[in-house]
Image 1: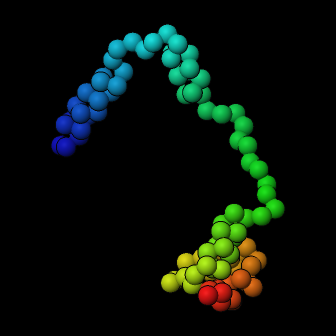
Image 2 (image 1 turned 60 degrees about the vertical axis):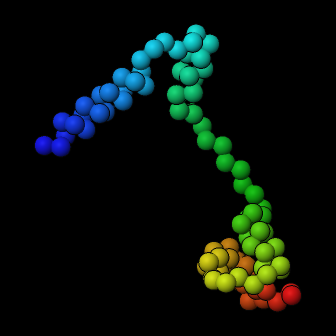
Length: 88
């Protein structure tokens, strides 16, 4: 019952988005952009940026909640979670 208005709105939206011509330069660039990348680049690091930032914040102030404790334990950084906020 409610599909007819939704289909009509989707059709109108589709027409609005596809009407008109694209510029010739943008056409090739848009076609390239729409192709999904063949490879995904991943960089392996020795330091975890989340762990490093959490250490810095814990040196500055005490956390109000234990939001990052589980992550820090999984990262193997149990020492910094035990002395959280000790530097005042």
